[in-house]
Image 1 (cartoon, rainbow, N blue to C red):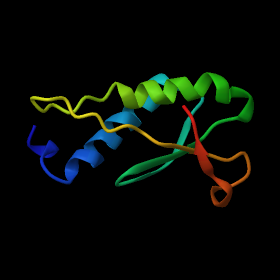
Image 2: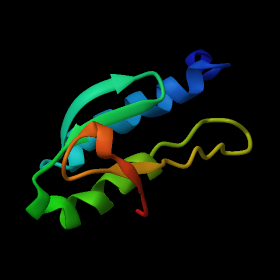
Image 3: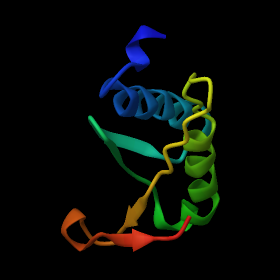
Amino acid sequence: VTAWIGQGVVACVINRAAVNVVDHAPAAELLMNQHDSLVGQTDLDRWDETRPLLKAAYDAVVVPYPEPLVIPPALKVSPRSWGHMTEAAW
């Protein structure tokens, strides 16, 4: 529980979400983990099935405080490149 204290909370959430993505979203390929974000890719023809699995991977992470802390994930996507990413709905 100590690792959850302070700024490490976001990193802990991201790390646990990454494990969930690997375990439960097989079409998602994680490319990079930065302190507060994950970057990945999937085939465009598998996006509709992969997107809800990614959301579920994040939503499954619960921060163990007396009042559960929920850190909602944001989603940015592009079929072209990182420089063309825009916010998208889950």
